[in-house]
Image (tube, rainbow, N blue to C red):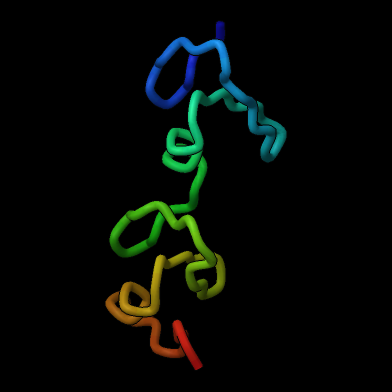
Length: 77
């Protein structure tokens, strides 16, 4: 049995995610998302959808981008 790197649960159905040359082991998609999803630069929520981006900075939504002074991004055109 392997151990989830997020919650520490030992589970017989863990899975591995290979990203950026590293291997991660998780027991659920929830733990994988918590550990690997990019975080909003304003509110720190994990970004599970597309989000919005200015240069290399990711935001969960236009509201958070605007709150940090980014004005040209839109959730909808």
